[in-house]
Length: 185
Length: 185
Image 1 (cartoon, rainbow over the protein chains, first blue to last red):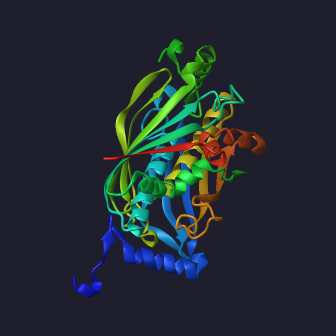
Image 2: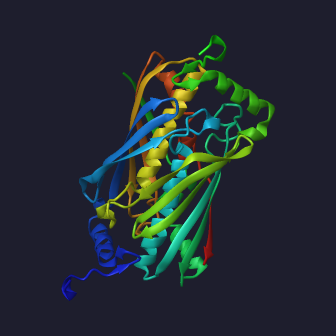
């Protein structure tokens, strides 16, 4: 690779491309609008399959290089067959992956090297809510804890600031409207 | 299978076992407490892998029959390599799968037959939030729409009530505390 075309990366992130993306969004705010999509088909009992095919963003429609499929099921104590990850666990996947990428990308933007990053997550749910046995206990997660182990020269405070940029942490901690539209076929 | 041991299912859900679960929770409220878990390891750039191995619930620790692994990546316009589903899309997987199971289980409890159930989801994100270019635009989802197509004899209103039992819809629409704890290693 010649000097002219050398890609400079930090934490694997192309920092020049990141700067260009931020510059493009500043001059054309519409480029920042993304619309993510998923489609789901019920199979039986707690089993269903979600397909991820494409999205809108940066001013145009995109197809993923391939379709990603994700099976879900409930574990046996929740009357499922334990064939796949449960919906609640998928929320932890979303949060874990988002916190990782948020730290890594924002560290790259600030020139902070991340040597390694691992996390463990725990989320509490009390089924009284879902089962309709209590109006006071929420149906969903009561709280979630994300424990991060990061190898980096940055301070704990700096890293906390980076983790707090996570869009999924923001989605979970803030009330986000979900519109459910049912069509009987 | 003899008459005595015949399992009666509705929408694939063992309705007798469901009744027993509800009865058990009523007599021993602690059985309703679940703690879901995930562990994540960063690979490079926007790539990371989450493992789902076990959980606490119904009064004891459980290991899944096998470990479920979920790779995440960012698409190319977001400086990733498009090798896997993005964190934002995983949130839609969680929501789609949860709404499906919530409708199917609560329909089973009420004796409502679901012939088929499909959904498409769209969620809007404006990157001004994540990029730190605006304090007014949220970092995460602005809103999410879930369109359900259900084949059933139930009314639209009945089905809406079932969909509204979804723990993940509740988690997204309600502010849920996320505690981030960082350890530098």
